Image (tube, rainbow, N blue to C red; front, side):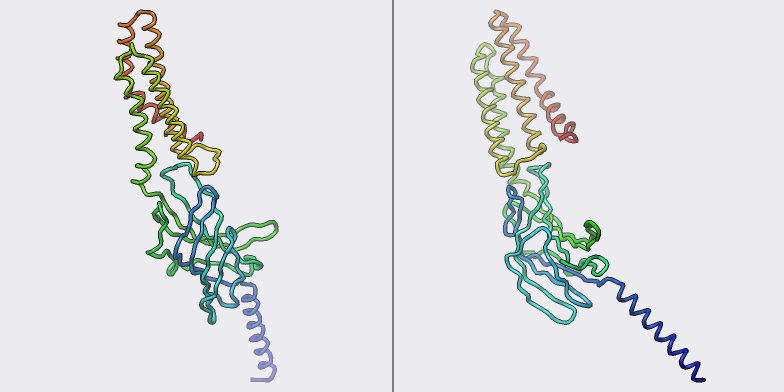
Length: 303
């Protein structure tokens, strides 16, 4: 092989190597991130926050990411493990979360831990979740809640002029069904039944009937406000609000029947009053069903 051929071959090899290096330089650094949640210390619905204690790690090829929590402020970050291509932290932080209460008190809430690099955009760094190792400790719990799911995903977040890779770890929690039913629906059910007992009172004693209806109505309003006091001010109706509207309408029906019976009795039309009251009493189950369907299903898309 001549010198010219050797020189030409060296030039080709050098060009090829430079091309590979250029492609590698243009490719973003791939960082695999994972979390292991030890505990959720506090879920504050009124403040829209939650606190978490967890391990956070990164598998990287070049340099470890200079990360930040987009929706939270850490109170403690302690580096626990560091070796070539891997770094791990123990983190305690408080996160801001926008909760959705439309299904309250049977709501499911998503607690998000959102991580992004402070300076490297998506052309230089891309996060991917460590599905195999990430998760929730079996001993973790939140009083009044039960864990439903744990998920993670990598997304692209757009800023004016540039995009950043963002990784989101989501812990889904839901309220414990039996305590919710006992605390939120048994008391109001008893109040409603007391109100409906007025149908057992003679229509001629209309003053007592009206008194029962109004007293239980005030009790229901007070209970409604007390139940919602744990939630922040909302611009929409919750499921509990819609059920309470159905109950208020039922109270209005009850009081309306008593008022109409009072008018008939005052006109000395006792027999008509008794017949009217019997018809309304037979109509009561249908009224309850219609009110519940209307307020819980029909108006839901408009709330």
